[in-house]
Length: 63
Image 1 (cartoon, helix red, strand yellow):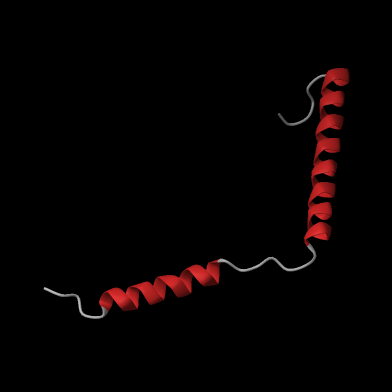
Image 2 (image 1 turned 180 degrees about the horizontal axis):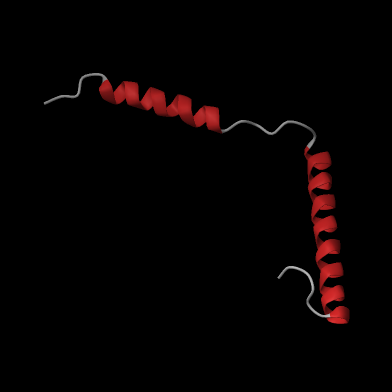
């Protein structure tokens, strides 16, 4: 038995779906990377401060 044009229709549908999911990120890549790096630096500072507080005063915060 043949599937008719179902295979072609499915391929077209999957192609359309995959193109919709591959949206390009907006903005300048260098600015975006710098912003992400700043976020990571802030997270690292917070983690370092938390570790220092635990080392000095015990474990009062979250684990």
